[in-house]
Image (cartoon, rainbow over all chains, first blue to last red; front, side, top):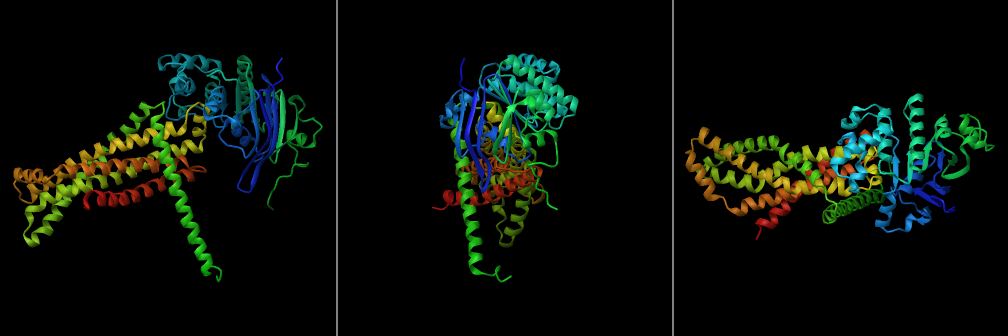
Length: 257
Length: 264
């Protein structure tokens, strides 16, 4: 059995001007596992995954996928790694000008793994996996509800059979029932693909449903990692305060009075 | 108050503004070079080029056509009124065709397209930027510059000359209508005078200008949209900046190209 983690981040730092957003992030996810990164607004969650996706270049540190440092790769090698990654954005980030079927098969079409003629059938197949009818494929994103947009975003993220999938606050803006539906779909899809999942969220119910590992980020540093099942009674005061939504504790919100 | 009048602070403010302007010029230049270089590396996106081409050439046609016709008509009236003071009314047809083909056709079409297309490109790409769609492209194995910018630059440079050919024809036609219907010129001699006076270099110089203006309009629309920040306000600011900057650049570029073509 391989001991090389699917994703490893070590000492990753990123500052915007004088503001240090990531201050030495260390993370590791084994292949086939689902990691949930928790943290308050502005704690550095999104910047962490944007660094892995290559959308932001860190100032220092190492990011390894399958044991290879992506930060020292050539552009072409980086693109090849990117081809094996899927991403569900917080607001789905569907392309308004394209119909749903083209959104879903965008990566397959971009990689020329499928012809436009076959893309509609493939889109219908993937849409079925996220509980949407084939007829949805002919609609435009603007015609969909928030929950449907998230499901189409999930379909787009899994359509190219990625090895790693990132989920950026997958349940934000959804009602609790739809949030649970999306979480269920995420778990099913990730298991079916055998993929590694990394999610960022501050929705505790969602974190417990989709994660088997969890890590907490605060002020740009990972302050705790452990089993997602222990959230709320982890023994770490910071994690427990966050998980239980308590006002008093080591995390102090900076409120102007 | 005393600080505000400190000459060193004023100098520092001017210095900062100059440095910012230099940085912006550098950024736009690098952006333009990257956009053009992507044209030589596959994949190309002919469908997107075609869509941008239709947006510029076909959907801008009514506004450019109306502008050209009325400009030609006004030009004929004004030049007749001016030239009649020293008995040179016969030069009206020549002035109209020269002004339209060399200057007014490309410049006015450029300004109209800047208002329509520059704003549309900035708003579309800006909205994509603030809603993570540009980042989504990267995660979907697609280079955003290649997908969003290069097709629009190519379409701008190709579509504008075609629009200006139409603007030239309609502008001259506007002058001819006013000349023959209102000013009493003989219709066929007005047209003969126009064609006799017109030289190929007048038309070609106008079309070269048009291609440069089309490129600039697309470039400023894409650049401002691509670099927009924040939400709706950021997109609005990008849209305004795209129209203002491309309009100013069209006028500045018009002077530079006129110097190159006609000052010998």
